[in-house]
Length: 187
Image (cartoon, rainbow, N blue to C red; front, side):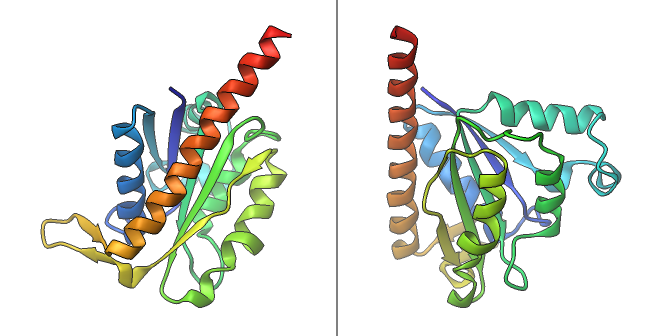
């Protein structure tokens, strides 16, 4: 099965974005995908701000992106754009770092007015990084992700259905990617 890297661009470990990404990773793992998580906030801030590509932490993060067949890029939307911490990380990726990968943008935000940030702010950067196959993203309202006292979170039924539909398309695209690669090897 394809391997998936779930990248969280949220500055908070208890964010609604992290909860949505955790749900997505669990759903994909339950269907046999190998999943790994990368919380950009855990990278050394000095490396991100200085653009330090040669540090161990950044090299490992870049290697995780390179090793994945599919990448989920998740971010809260602040002021009509994805987070600065995510931008700092994406700037450290080499040219064409997303080439040959299936990429799924996921965003959370307070109002539907932030919905277009996926297509107008995030998608161009993913494309500039060589992503051949960027799926239509999934936007979830903050109000559809309820935090539990235990620290976890639950998605509202309609939001969970929409995310599941998106994850099914992502999984299907990863499967088709594998078929295309096998066909190309057989030529």
